[in-house]
Image: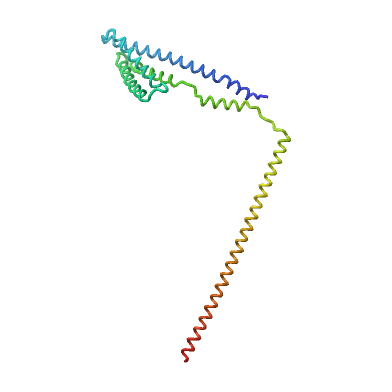
Length: 235
């Protein structure tokens, strides 16, 4: 029988993937709307400014070219598998396009705050497209959550009493055997230590005996030499 936690985990895991897919689709739609709005605002603002400068029909073409170049470079730089040198070149061109477009928006007449806002809109276009390119499922997190849910859903196993008793007896026997082996090893080590101590004492006694015998020989030699010297002086 599943617990409430296990049941919740099962339902959560069941709806996790559809929920993530819906969230990704919603975020991408919102990003597209933001992108369209920001591009429209920047494009119209630049076009009106260029019209006021007397650019004519080119006032409507040039901003569109810059906006399309921005989108193209963002797509190249954020596409997985694209060559590294292509991405680097796209980022360089993107930086130039963003700076020029932001400068045109900032140079348009009007209050300073409004000019700053329109200049930031260009950065918003680049940022939104960059975020949109980064949106993808985190498969490692999904797999980890699936493992957690599977573990939570796994029912607890009840061990048979006889099996539990047999396992306990086996564990006790193993523990006793290990204790006996440890005690035997301790006895062997103790006997070995005593044997080494006895041999060391025997060697020390033999060395002392040999030293004593050597001392006696030296004393006898010294006495004999002294007597011989005394007899020689007397004669």
